[in-house]
Amino acid sequence: MEGSKTALLSTNKLLLIAGTGWLFDAMDVGLLSFILAALKQDWGLTPSQLGWIGSVNSIGMAVGAFLFGIYADKKGRKSAFLFTLLMFSIASGLSAFAWGLGSLLVLRFFIGMGLGGELPVASTLVSESVEPEVRGRIVVLLESFWAVGWILAALIAYFLIPLPAVGWRGAMILCAIPAFYALYLRFNLPDSQSYQHQNSHAQTEPVIKKIQSLLSNSFRRQTIMLWIVWFCVVFSYYGMFLWLPSVMMLKGFDMVKSFGYILMMTLAQLPGYFTVAWLIERVGRKWVLIAYLLGTLISAYLFGIADSINQLLISGALLSFFNLGAWGAMYAYTPEQYSTNIRATGAGMAASIGRIGGILGPLMVGFLMANQVGVSMIFALFSLSILVAILAILLLGKETKQTRLL
Image (cartoon, rainbow, N blue to C red):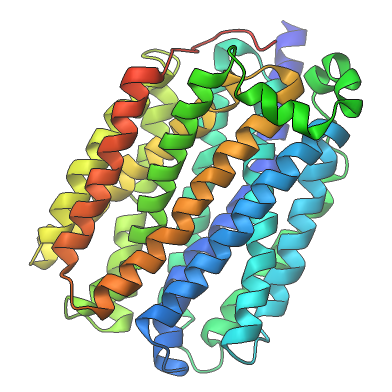
């Protein structure tokens, strides 16, 4: 009994420490979507230029996920965990002092590197550190900190960004300073026992061999499935959510009202995560992920054709509920596809492929909006992307519920 209490305390502590960093990462991504709307007014940026700000963030995330996934398999999860948050925190703070589009793009690249590297490493560390019976639920709860970060970003955007004394620069500083506290918390975090006990030999394993292993007969099916799913989900997520405030303004609402409505939609993310956390150990990863992606598909289409405030709020809330719930299931599902010696590399590669979608999504929206393509058509394309992800899971995915990681 005493041992189970200690294990629970340890799991909760790990969840809290990992989750705080995740929260501040989400605050940054959430604030970026609101900052795009503010920069359009402050700097007079075109839709294409705004698209590049979102896309360069994803370029950094793609590079970070690839490099730090490999780094975590060679040097340990904790080391990568610390390095990525430090990079993110410094670059995020400095971005408050950007003097133009060029400097902001450079800093957004390094923010993206830290963020992109941290997320797959964090889910890998947590997956390896908890019991199989609760592993999926704990990883989804880790992902739920993303919703808290988005809610805080929406609150900052609604109450503070419109104030001349704060603006978007003050919002970036508010995001960066607390992230250093999360960094302090992580110094005492142990590395996963799975890595320490089973993966010491892999530190000398060549990187190219690790990458080749992902496409070997043992792992090819799940690798292809993950790459397709990550690409489609990230493509649609960043395309939709980074542009959400701008889309609301296109539908006739001013900046303050748009931020307020999106805050209301964002609150639906938390029940999305919590329902997945409850279902994932009962129904399984595969079918929960499919169900929530199907909900995302339908919600995205309905949001695109919505023409009243009630329709926008309901479909937007459903989009937040299902899409972020699907992200939770995806993060739980991904590390379970691989063995310990290549787990972080595999998760990082999948996330890196996904970030390519994150590069293309905002650019596509900026291009289509500049060419007068309607919002309904743009969101229909995102629905189609989600359909491809669902088919990949149906045809190639296998259930990994409560399997012991090797």
